[in-house]
Length: 507
Image (tube, rainbow, N blue to C red; front, side):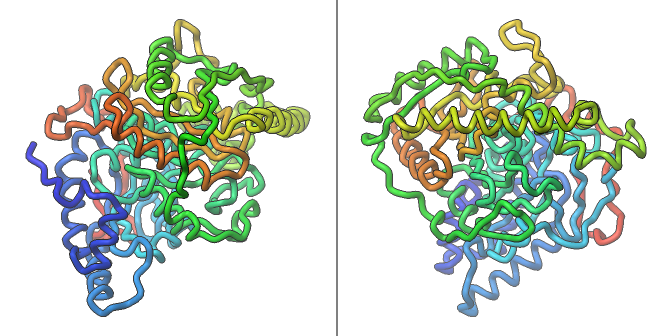
C-alpha cells in the first residue's frame, strides 16, 4: 500500500501554524486526511460514521477566513475525529450500541462545541466498546478496531478508535474520555499520548452523576504538544459540570519548561494491588533502567491503597445504574454483556455499599498524598498485558490468575482514577512482543500542568534513546485482520435516518 505522509504525518501544532501562515489550505489538509482514512481504515476500522460533505464545506469556509485575515481559533482548519460516546449534531452517534444505531443528535455536546468553536472540523466519529464499557473497542454496530501495529490484536478502549486513528495519521485531532483508563490504555496500546486531566479541568457535561470525579473527558495526541493544544481549546468552566471551575485555558497551550534533572521520581510495577504480566514487569524494569539517569532520583516505592478494587467496583457500578436503568428495565437483552454486567452489579448494591466506597476513595486519596511529600511523579506501566487478540473480550487471565470481571485487568489505571490525580500515558518504545509500551506518568494533586510539562521533557529525552522513543506502525505493510474486524456486526448502523442525507457514510 503506497501512502503519502507529506501532510498527514505533521503534528497538529505544525499544521495549524502552516494554515495560519497561508502555507497550507484547510481544504488540502482535509482531502489528505480523507485519503488516508479511505486507504487505511479498512485495515483497522478506527473510523465509524463520516461527515465528509459537511467537512468539505467547513474546510472551504475555513480557507476563506484565512484569506480574509479573520481571527482564527486554536484549531482552525484541523480535521477532527470525535469519540462515538460524544453527541455530534447531525452526525450519527451510536455509543456502539444497537439501541442507538440510528441516533442523530440535534446538538453537539459541550466538548465538541468548544472544539468546533476553536476551528476544528468534525470529519468522522471513532469507534468504542458498547456504551464505553471495557477496554477492547468492539461492538455489534461497527465491529472491532484493530491495532495499527497488528490488526489481529486489539487497540484498547474505550477510546480505541481515536488512538488507532491518531497512530495511523488519519486525523490530527481526536477526542477521548476516561473512567477506568479509557484515554490511557488505548494510547499505550497504539503508541500515542492519552492525558487524563483532573476532574473539572475539561468539563464533562454528559455524565449523569455530575458530582462524580471518576469520569472525565480529555485529549489524545501523537505528541504531548498535540494534547496541550487540545487542552487549551477545551478546558474551562461550564455549569454543566459542577466540578468545573474558573481557569485559564491558554495556560495549557504550551508545555511548561521542566528540568528532568531536578525531578524526584518514584516508580511501581503494580501499585501494590494490580495483577501485572511478568513480561510487562520485565519490560518496565528495562525501561526504568534506561531512563533513571535523567532524573535527580528514581526510586521504587510501596503503596497501601486499601480495597481499591471493591471501591472502584461500586463507584463504576453507580454510574452504570444511572445511565442504563431505563434501557435495562425496558429490555435487559438490549444491552451487551459488559454494560449489563455493570448495571446488575450496581442494582444489587445498597446505600451502605455506596457510602463505604465514597469513604474508601477519600482514604485512598489521603494515603496517596504521602508519596508526594518526597517525590514529584509516580511512574508505572499503563497496562498489565501486551495487546491481545481483538476476538477476546478482555484479558481474563494474567500470569495464570483468573480476573474477577471484565475490567479488573484495567487496575493499573483505575487505581489512579480513584486518587483523582492527573495522569498521562506516554509512548515508551516496544514491549517484549514488539508492541507499543505505554508509561503511565502520575502527577501531584491537581498538577495537570506539571504532568504535561514533565511528560513533554521526557518525550524529548526519549526521542534520543532508541529503546524509549515513540514507535510508529508500518502502515504500508498492514494486512487484513483474520477474522474480519466487521465479522461481529449484527446490528449495522442505520445511515438513512434524519439529518444524515449524503453527509454520513459507514465503513
